[in-house]
Image (cartoon, one colour):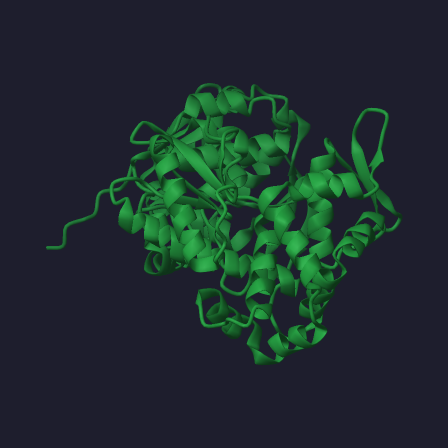
Length: 460
């Protein structure tokens, strides 16, 4: 006789104010009869949690999909949804769409006015627990396939997602208490996933080819609450990563040596026709050397801030006029550096504006080649060719090569990634950084100890 698998005990986070409010509506009872429908208090509470954790948001609105509600909650979910509308927790914004089987709702001010502090609530309903545990790890079938692929190609970066990775739930919850309503609940979903060890990962091969995990989704203000085996973590970041990889690409193409890791990547990614176009376009070698010197020995954003005209308000905020919107709209930044970072990205990726024009004038031949790459047909499925190329080469060098080398050398420490940075024990961070620099030189030919930086402001 086949042994029945044990149903995992589910504990969910819920606002204390919501819990008290629902308990009052049920007059302290576990069930309530409304219009000949018997509603379970436990299921009402879970539905509120489900809405906050599982639904897709559109601005202040959220989508509720009828098919998914039947699958993951109840076949007869409508009385529960109507109850949330009746108590003024949900407002219906948009009618049912036959195309995507979703309705657009909005959580009301009544919901957000309740005590924001979270507590935990235990799910005891057997049928609901079975649905929640339909794959025993809280992942959809599609996500389980994504996880399996990530383990196959980047196991060195996902193998440490286990029970040793923890978040101080109390500290994290207190940290986000002052966030606005949408950010607060979005971050609570992340906290909930840490609390329940719900690890999910994905690699978008057709776009950036980076590894996307809960760490890439975690708000920077919450990173300080994360530990592995109770030890603090640290982060190694690549200085001005995408401009640097643009320089590495140009150096490789124009120095005549393609018989290396970078060259092999470029042959496969760009193709011979685009490489030939780039060579025909040509490069100003003096300009390229100046770009290299700024990247390796100075600070690109400080340099550009000193050489590009910027706009500043009396309250010390910087801004640029976004002419891609109608009507035109000012985009604001807290510092000149933040503005300049944005200008650099717009300069690389087909952006417009006075500041973009000035940056391109400073490095005419480099951005001329950027335009050649961006205009090339059928290079990528993403919105921008150069973005796709730079993110892919960065992911290949940092995540596929250097990170794997680190994992082999340092077998007894955890290793994670967050976009283009690597994360491990804070106690090991200097040793890992120094080894990563050696491997960075090996793969790229860049010998500079200022390239790999230990970020001091996130994992405190």
